[in-house]
Every structure is written in structure tokens, then in C-alpha cells.
Length: 121
Image (cartoon, rainbow, N blue to C red; front, top):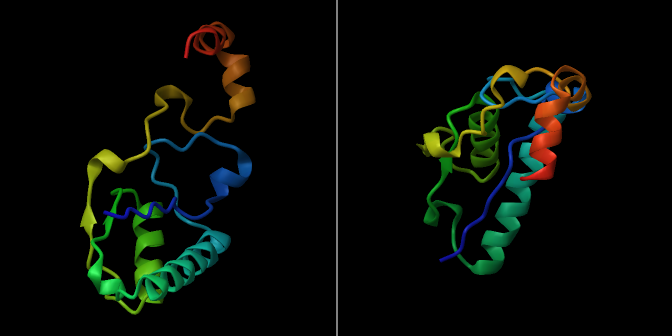
């Protein structure tokens, strides 16, 4: 069995260094271009394997940044954009109250929690 894992494309919160977690932050223009590029890379891999893109199963996190990445990649592969499964277990981990903050902001806000985490991951 072969597994190809693709992370969602770039969001504005990625650029700002914000913890996204369960926040449904959309792809930005660069993220959409990255999704096209990932689709092209996958297509090349599939050609080398001698199998059509339709041979594989596709599954995404339910977050829109992941779904949009998947749909753009599938279109690039010549597949129907929406022909894939949704798996909630692929959702990014939650950062709770820290979502939307940068790591330096988290360190200022909760230095004891960060110190404890860093000491025992």
C-alpha cells in the first residue's frame, strides 16, 4: 500500500504565525497555487507508477483549507473536485484558547504552561 500525504496550502494565519487549530481559516492565493503544484507532483508520481489518478482513494480533513487544497489538487489531476471522503480525525489539533495567537503571544500570556510543556512533551 502506498500513502501520499499532502498538507493544506498556505493561509494568511500561517504567514502571521498564528495557531490555527480548529479555526476554519481559508487558503490564500499562494495556498491555492501550492495546491495546483501538489496536484502536478502527484500526477507525475502516478504516471511513474503507471496508475491513473482515479485508482487512488482521497480523504480530507473537514476544514475548508484542507478541502480546498484537495479539490484544487483533484481538478489538477483531472478528477471531479468533490469525489473524496471527509475524515474528522484528520482535523488539525485544537489549541483551545490559544487559537488565533502567535507562539510569542502564547509565551507572554501563559509562560508557566509553556515551560511545563517544553519540559515534558
